[in-house]
Image 1 (cartoon, rainbow, N blue to C red):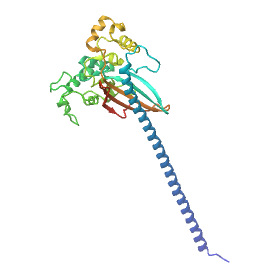
Image 2: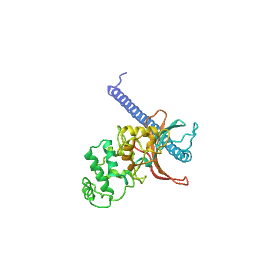
Image 3: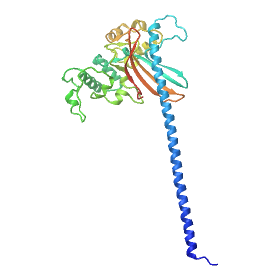
Length: 322
């Protein structure tokens, strides 16, 4: 019996087409399966990342609440003469405290705003010293100080190196000088000569925002709370004296500069710029981390504590870029 060659070829051709269709269907199914698997994995990782972020946020917020409690505790017991283990009061000079909570940690520091330079009250000299010590040239520091003063004064008169509304109105995105006191430190980024790195810092060093305030309402600096960088802005200050002050206050608050062993000449130079009393306003920085992670979630809050021991949030930022 002979089979027609045309029929045989047609059958073989149909088998080939069917095989190709099966291969194409399998390929499409594999793509769908891999795509679904990738999407599921991505969503799982995204969910885990979100969960991790939320946990770190809650840890940071727990640190804020703990710090407020410690401020209350400090107001009651900071002058105690006998300190038992576990009853130590937290310092308000930016000293970090790390505590475990569940599987995570919060690292929190408290800074009394009186230990910073008030941008609305400070003299030109204090600001200039801060900027020069930060790394600006004398010319850059003079210009930035003049521009800051022009920004907040109520007139349209230029300082030697300053800027008023006509300069700001000439920018591609124009705006006017405020001609009023700073309400937040973030406003400084609008001032001529101020850069993001100067204000917020970078990986190498902090920004000047950590050393300034709008809340102390004083032209003096509380040496019991001021960090090294702020102490060094005080006329007559040296690195050796600044280190002596920081070392001394680890044990006791300074009541008089003579306690620290500072000479009368240095004291007379510093006296117009310093105080030894704190304010009732504090900035709290709290960072939440999980396990051994270095990256965390940071929250910053500025709170005011009343005589009745009630607190009010003056500023709250979550998260803080670090």
